[in-house]
Image (cartoon, rainbow, N blue to C red; front, side):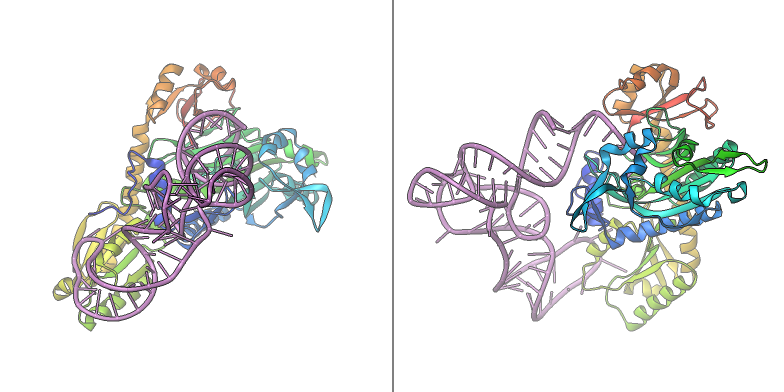
Length: 471
RNA sequence: CGGGGAGUGGCGCAGCGGCAGCGCACCUGGUUUGGGACCAGGGGGUCGGGGGUUCAAAUCCCCCCUCCCCGACCA
């Protein structure tokens, strides 16, 4: 079996990553540095990821809406930490309509501020709470070193923004989003296990009280932050006077959360599941789950059979497509479908047709088997589930194999330098982290309690930290 | 912004003072077709930009721009 990717995944992971994106036609660089063109193949995957997240977000009670991309610069400045955190990466419009603007307009890096300006109008009473909003939008953060999907100057994401009457309610909601939305979707649909935890003070979102993250282990061992969920406390409420009347008639500031997941997830899918032959898509988010390949010209009944199978697949809810382009050599087509990561390939040729069977080829393992026409639908359904599980299991194994205990900072550095993650007592690295002395390229990914549960605060004692290289 | 590398056809590259080339891709015709087919023909270029040296510059010199890789910042 020839590989469709020339860069070696083991020796040249970044080269391999870029080549997969190019050959699978997922994305291109845009004409402005750091921008990204998401091609139809890539966007089709993103749409499925988006649909899964959107469904879960709705289940969590949030409603979709849309806020403007342009924000008055003064809004950003109202929350001191927020503006300080974002100012280096802001794109600012100073000229519009042929004139220099009196007040510059910022292209949103995130929407806490505009949304709060509306919250403060919409929220009057405890009866208006909780207010649970979500929006699918593009945001701009000027990046110094862009990488397709992983770090682009403009990216697509979902940002949830909620306001609650009590700190407890906000806190509970944030944890629910973290676990029941993000972690659930990553496990069930993306087939990617994640490590959840609390961000250290250094890594926390600018303006948040607490930030939780879900971190994934990529194929080269590096970490990728796959979602963040923030408890904003009353920071933005105070900056924007977002207050409400309690049932007792007193006036209080709302307690807020915000949470986001972006097109970066596409990078995770590629880097976690991809292999030397290209992409390997989990069936749940594969735009085409089963590709029916007409191997070569045969009697007309062959083509009729393929069409009948296709119709039945579609009718039974399987995302299916037919490749009957027999003018393109068989090998080229096979390699192409492998690069694209299509979970199952069904081959129909004169050879099989005589016996009333098709050959089933799994993308994840490369295993082949023959299957009678009548059993194809049922067999593919089983295999799609098997492949989904297989990819998760492999990713889980990758994750487990990457984690290693360290009992000193030096030991942690050694582990991380070998492309693994060091788990270490947070107290042993607190100061080193604070002064940026963890080591080059290393960062604290997140913190958890020794029993694995989510901490409430970074000041809790006995916390454990993961230290690793990250994208 | 520091350190390193590279800009030549759509992509990947060679050429490094003397007619602008190669592989892949593309177009036409034919033969093929069970793991990247073959033969024949064809189209496509301001050699990143500007200035200079020279009879002659893709090639040498100066300035500028862009991209990629490694670090400091980030979903």
